[in-house]
Length: 180
Image (tube, rainbow, N blue to C red; front, side):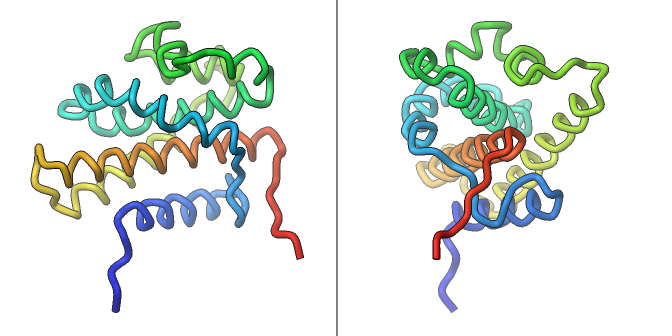
């Protein structure tokens, strides 16, 4: 039996979990505009994320899901403006700093207030997704500080970005359907 590539395992795990929670559709919500920003966001994020990974692996992973959500919200709100920002990750990070990125996205981008039950529910959902990805990464037992380990970390970030965007698009009411 052929082995499933690591990134596909991450994608399948997140898709199954988020579907079971009613947070995404069977066909993943996406947009080429959002997908096209992945490379530049990853290049900008990786120095910060990799530095934080050692002591805060779940946050390092989860922040990318928040970034995906923010980019999806920007796409829905005023993409003609936000698409002109060269470094969307730095734009998001620099509003309150890396450590408060999650709060900035929930409060200022998604417009959730801390007294809103959705505020804590979203934090728990992102935390669960990031923990799932982290545990999958650990189970693979990649040798630390190798190209293989780095590539796996980037694959995790990519999937969290994709699913963060899909989650927010779903929250905004977008649904994808296969055409017959």
